[in-house]
Image (tube, rainbow, N blue to C red; front, side):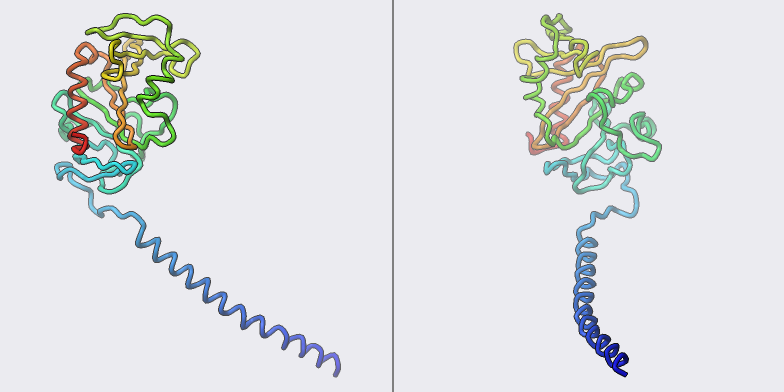
Length: 258
């Protein structure tokens, strides 16, 4: 009998713990419900139907900077929605600076995977450049956050001079061509710039190799967004028109810059 009474007393001592656990479980359930509601409200949503290519320009924010982008210029389908985004991949016909016509627009491009996801950011800045030789009338534009990288102007002043050859060669229309030395991060590329005022015009360019033409890239900082413009190296023979065209395009995409 004493053993039965002792067991009963132990069971009775466990009951209060069960009652204390119930409020904790209710609190946790309420907390999960509140978190689910907040996530539902704040989760980004996109239109259920695709945006037409001829729709008005979309307000898209990259790194806190607002751009107005025509849907037909956006190369990656999943990027065709308004709101905040991490990256934009664009293409424009040159020299009109209009989005490519639907019948001439390529697919996501050779630097996108079969699922239509954005291209990876690997290697040098020119390593992911589209095959401009197949569309010499195309200007390819990428907009992404600058992040922890140095600004384009700072790289021009303090980074590139460490890696270029001591002597620059003469280029087209008064430009200077300074090859990057072998063994540097930019091996196989040239720094092309206006000697008297490099900030006015400069570009990093790959060199032609066999049937593969050279490709150039120029970067411009708009707020905290890094705008990379990729174009055929052949365009350097009229770099003044190219620079003016880039200015007009930036004005179209970011009117606040005017």
